[in-house]
Image 1 (cartoon, rainbow, N blue to C red):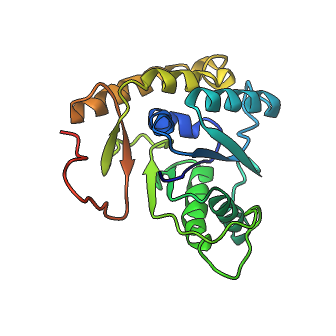
Image 2: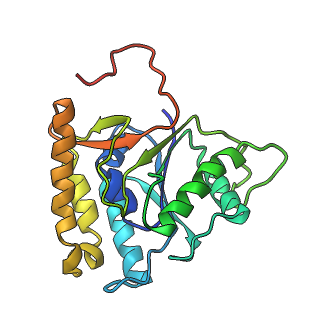
Length: 231
């Protein structure tokens, strides 16, 4: 069963963009790792210790492992150093599937993280070159890289595919609400949770399910049969 790495600029981006899918993949037995590039702080009602507790609680709800790269929030740069740090995580987790933020965004951190992650996918396969934090694991090239939507732009996603998250809506909602400092204490952000519920129902309606999440693929997706298509 493929190992999966879900990369987020800040704690909560993965939950907001694809929390239901993460919970579903974990329930199916996949080894899912969430990589937070930064600690997400400062924010109006948060601090590093609070955010660490919240992100750990969210990961527990989803049933996944979580690690943090330690880059500085609001100052993420697309650099060779950062690419190699992520490549080390790709090797250490032996990730065969990667999820990264959608590549159109108003937030510079999101844009930089996606560039870093896409290039790190290539760097992780380079032989004869150690990567920081790779724990001696061999080079690997993740077979698939998909984009999830956690964008700060008011765009309407035009996804390549949707994943049915029926039965995992509550896990997604609870994982997002675990970030009390972001979506409860900060009343300005409280409507986000209801928006996520509505979006899940809308995308579910497109494939005849109760809820779904959208994803984009730059590369063609190969099928061996039509059995896996949701109709």
